[in-house]
Structure formats: C-alpha cells, structure tokens
Image (cartoon, rainbow, N blue to C red):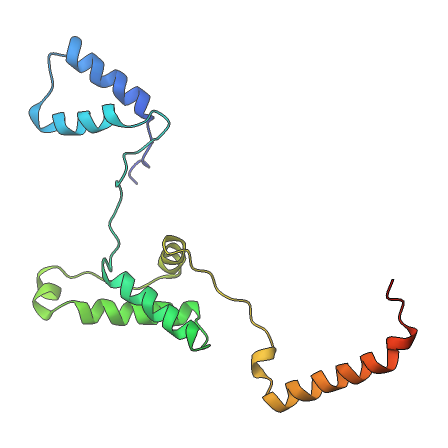
Length: 160
C-alpha cells in the first residue's frame, strides 16, 4: 500500500528553494514558475491556492445546483438520493460516446461525493416536518380551534 501524502508547510518549501538557489546549484527551468508561486504565497498555508482535483462534473455542477434551487422553490423534496441520481444523469448526458470510449470514467455519485458537493455549494438538507402533509382544511381547523382556546382562556391569563 503506498504511503499517504504528507503535507509540508510553505515556509519549509521556501527554505528548500533558498538552498537550491544558493548551495544546490540553481533551479531547474520547469520548476521555476512553481517556485515563484510558493515564494509569493502566504506562510500560513500548506497548499497553493487552486490546488487539488477538479470537480468531475465541472460546469455541470452549476446546472445541478440550479435544479436543486428550482425544486426547492417549487416546495418539492430534495434528498441526497435525488441529488446523486441527477448528478449521474447529468454526467452521462454531458459525455459523448467518443469521449466515453477514449476516457472511460466511472462516476457513481457516491455518498462521499454528495457530501463534498453539498459542502462546495453551501447546501444543506432541510429537516422534515409534518406540516407539509396537512391539507389547507386541517390547518384552518387548527387555527380556528387555537383562536377559540385563546378567547376562552384570555380572561384568566396573566398578561403582565
């Protein structure tokens, strides 16, 4: 099993660059641009800005976020399973058969992917309530009975 990645602070990377420039015999040309980025970055970071894997869906993630917002505006339920199913559908629709044959990528929209997607886009699942299952008639009946309760008990209530 390969060793796990160990992060190194940018301050140590700067020290290594200084050593290469002074005692190490110069800088290889293809690493020079990367060294300039490290020297320009703040010391408290462990990675450069923009590092890391790009999202699998790329621009299609914006489409998925729009679908989620539209569904929420219509007061329809948005679940993690629905997000995963829509992500798989968008992924397969966005790739042509030639792309799939040249670069086969298995995109499963796993639970971990859904969690990361929701964090990237500041989404959270709403708590379920039983109010959405009540009809208008039931809600009106409850409001009327509550008003009757208040009218009966208002004289005995201490309002101070």
